[in-house]
Length: 158
Image 1 (cartoon, rainbow, N blue to C red):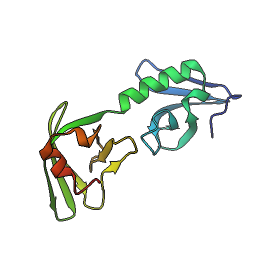
Image 2 (cartoon, rainbow, N blue to C red; image 1 turned 120 degrees about the horizontal axis):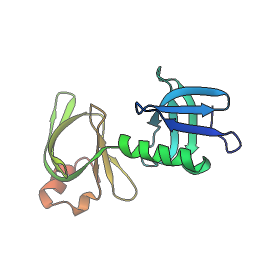
Image 3 (cartoon, rainbow, N blue to C red; image 1 turned 180 degrees about the vertical axis):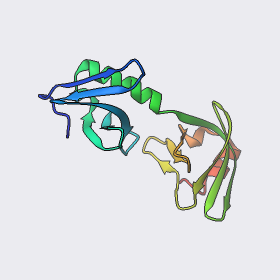
Image 4 (cartoon, helix red, strand yellow; image 1 turned 30 degrees about the vertical axis):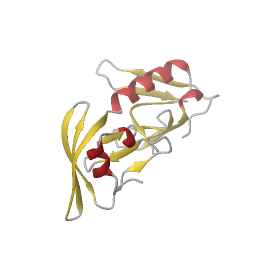
């Protein structure tokens, strides 16, 4: 079901922290899942039930009421933990995997991607890398990194 302006959408958080949705006549516990692309955080949000079935698709946060929008923005901020890479120490390729050793603003991290999964370079110069565990790493502008980091990244971005 797609959220529409004329249909009331009511969201609230229970005492245990779980989101609840009343949409039309239906009332259900839900969790938020952002649909691809992740580069548009206020668009294409899927509210899903405990069995991971979509209950409601919100195409744009600006189309829903203020209270529900505020709650979903809070939920998005909590769910969108992105590690910011500030230095690339090493990138090695092994059998079917690429291993990144990086320094993030949260500390040193080592993560892996599949060889066929390439970093996504956005129009604004931001690079997004999703590791095997589904964690998201971001480089705001790879050309602003130190020379060694740029050399390590250059085969994977142009």
